[in-house]
Length: 134
Image (cartoon, rainbow, N blue to C red; front, side, top):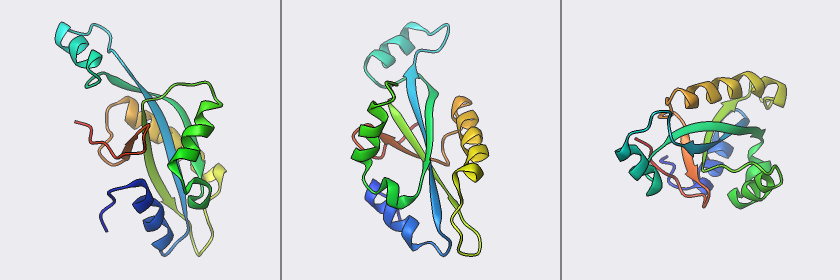
């Protein structure tokens, strides 16, 4: 099944043979050091910049059923973000992964995002719409 909306993601997570834990890394867009005039222009149009992870959290699909709720929760941190990256990890033998088990995969996600390797993650804007990053 193609995931075209955040609701699709939640539905697909529920259809997996093993229970899932969702991993979220929130990133902000920044101008890279030594940005060219073209990069500055793209950034000002909201089309460019380097993504820097600023916040991460793991949730069960039932805890993150509505993307708007995640956005509201993130506001309480006081940390601004532009893009949310999402991945999932499956349980074993019918047991859901716990938050301790999600710690290392979240760190790895943050490192990959920092390095610009984002193709394997679902990317969402603040409005919950899936976005494509190039």
